[in-house]
Length: 116
Image 1: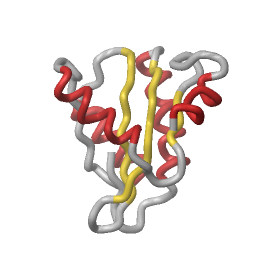
Image 2: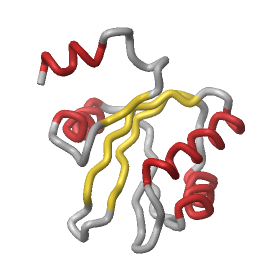
Image 3: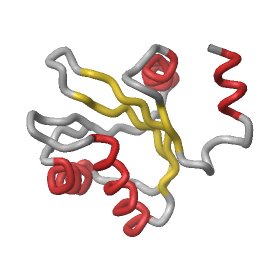
Image 4: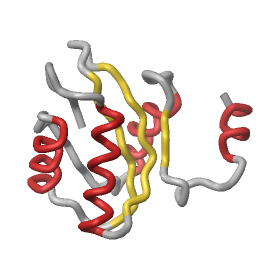
């Protein structure tokens, strides 16, 4: 999910999107990391567990909330995609990564800092 020039705070708008997703699909558990594009726009890499979300619905919702329609969604059905996505969580992003509480175990942050 990418920003566009003039769009708002991506973290705040992701919180709005998350509420909308949970109202519509009930379950939405995620890991998320922010990164800058080469052009300097903020974008999010997100791994989620939950119901199928159509590209069209997600693009329209993100456009309405964040004024940016650039969204790519794909099922992680091979290790190749999973390894590619894991790189974003290992390398240093912009700020921190965050997740839903039901995704991680109590004390994971301490373990993660130890691993890094």
